[in-house]
Amino acid sequence: ISGTSVDIGGTIVAHGGSIALGTRGQGSIQEDNLPTFLRLAPTGRLDASGLWVNDNGRSADSLQGRSFIDGGSVTLSSWKGAERTTDNTPDIAMAAGSVVDVSGGGYVDAGGHLAMQGNLPAGRGGDVTIATHTDDGATRYSGNTSGPGDLLGGRIYLDGTFLAEGFAGGGIFSLHAP
Image (cartoon, rainbow, N blue to C red):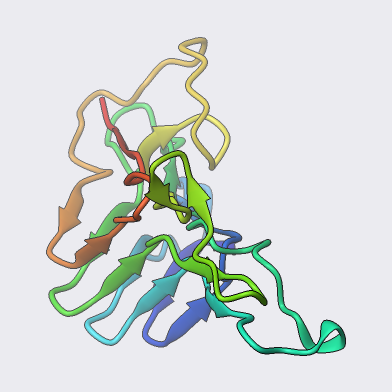
């Protein structure tokens, strides 16, 4: 999901999948020149957690399988502002109470056996990336474009909760800022 401003007050779910939210600042050529931001409100939840699946005792035609037990990924990004004098890169804010969940799940097969990854139960935590001042609205930094005259935009506020644990290992948290 991308836009001039992205404000999430509800829940987005993609178990074991990817959620990417991005925003881009407006330049002075825009008539309305509205403030831009990417915000996860206190009631906002981004859920790319892995599934907990128990196939024990299920018939062959009702098995769910272990395809989505690992946590997925969540990316929050803001494009570098177009202005050369004042930085209008959108801020990224997670309010207190908001949650980003990329936790791993687990799997019990039809015979009642817990799926293992080595000596640990299967189900890895996923990854979270937060990036400002990007060149493409995702996480690419080319270094080929000049930046604004200041770095007043693109602030990051992380007052929410991140969940990324998993039996087979936790996820990776990446923070990109100038």
